[in-house]
Picture: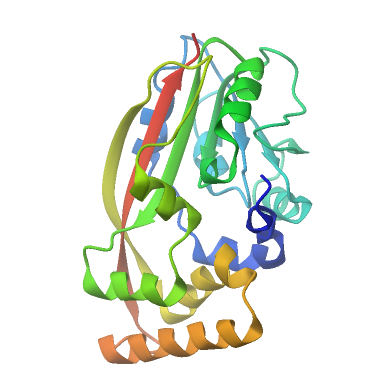
Length: 246
């Protein structure tokens, strides 16, 4: 995770928690359904404030651990989901024993990793027949106002990677399978600002650029009639990928 944006999120952990969506349970279940029978040990890598962790701990008998390179994000996760063990680490360097988990999953995170090194390291901690799962919530820009919102905020590293093609993984994992889900989330004006503020481009931008983004967002919201007391459905496409360790 050499890009400084990858470890910038802790400065906006509160806005990340408020502005970022949860993951559809069906998408998370699909990502993990290839796990061997009886599996329950799952590592959530790049867990952030626990958006994906929440869905994982809801699975029956699941034993979940959470890893993130940013201690501030893990502190927010512990407040939100007490009892989940947390570790500072990354996909390329995981403080877990060999063959100690049945699945490793990354939500909104694989675009920050070096895929070959991460595949090798995750292959070390996942037992034979275990699963690597990758998942992203991507705003659906087929709606004009959403496309304009992205233009104002700038595209994310995740959006750029997925627009270029499927995620790259390496041995010891087999071919990627993928599926997608369309859904929407009601968002207030304040929540949309929190979402923008939690994005790595905005976190690392100059004060002048941050002010420009907020000003242009407010102009867009005024144009579409979203006032301070209202809400609008923000459409998403969740894209999930899975691969089995050979």
